[in-house]
Length: 453
Ligand code: DOR
Picture 1 (cartoon, rainbow, N blue to C red):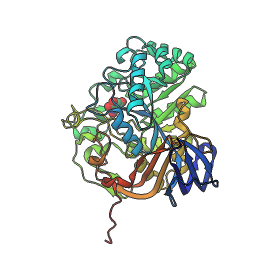
Picture 2 (cartoon, protein in one colour):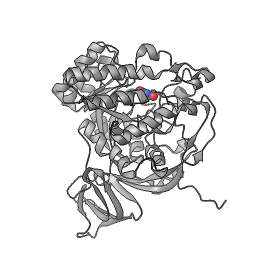
Picture 3 (cartoon, protein in one colour):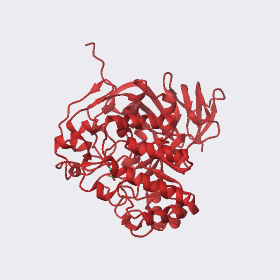
Picture 4 (tube, rainbow, N blue to C red):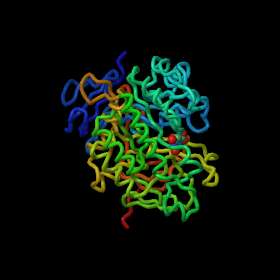
């Protein structure tokens, strides 16, 4: 039986994958884009008036934590994918640092079974590099690939043993899949809590030097060059790492990189209580554990270098590293709290601060959230064209809303953006031709009341 059709009227269609930028109508029937522009409209049609809104391919997040199996008290596939849909994402790749870690064919199958039952969008699992993320021997990469894993990573933990990393890279070549690299030298990182800087000395928090990341980025670029394999640098955070990636790319090494919204827009002074995004600010206490993240929020000069690298293509794409934690994991002294920011629902609004301040254009932003991440993993991108599966995101670039962590669909309320006004809002997310998120009933994020003051 034919599903009810959906007509999106007068949206600005923005698809950087095919240089599409025009105002038109889109008809969706049976999960597919039936036509763009003009065509026969069926009688049984639901219409969205999208004048003034932007319609893009569904966003793709190649780095998030859905916490299944085993850590469902932090997040599960149902809540995590609903949160992702609220963030505009139609495809997410979930990291394997679960309990147990996803290091076998049967565990990849388990995640996919759970996703088939619970997810509202596409879930692509990432398998471990090493068994139980112990960094001692390779996990069954071939088996996981045959079950549907799209990449390998020990995210959350570095692969300290260079020879094991070499083996993983060599093996990934035969599977034609990337190794996603959590770059952290364990000895330099040891006990670190925030970026090593004058601020960390002032706050009395043990610092994590930039070199803890950069030594590993350098090592793994050398191993990618040695093996010819594709290494993807996760959550790149320092100006030095950017230089290493830029030089390696110039030499033809197969290295790609992602940056998170928080490393682009927040800096280490957020640990002191600073909260400023665009024209909005909020009050927060120093030592607020929602700012504790790995890699840590870095210096302003790092954030500036990351943005330049995103624009010049050194950094390929944006990924959220959505890391939801339970309130108990975060309601601790800074030293003991878990690392991570719940960021999938705020990603677009936060990133739009770059657009509204003239630092990034909206086309590049959409490219870095759609075509570019799909290219890194070789999956997920569905353009806006007739016959393509309908995976779409409808955006209001100018709508302001106040972040309220209690309204998050994610179980993780650990966001330092609570109370901040963001300009740029996801209005609806369409997956398989159906509206999987609409902000119409999203009372908690209803537009901020305008005051005349
Ligand atoms: O802050 C982080 N949290 N960084 C990581 O690499 C892992 C993540 C998590 O799993 O919570």
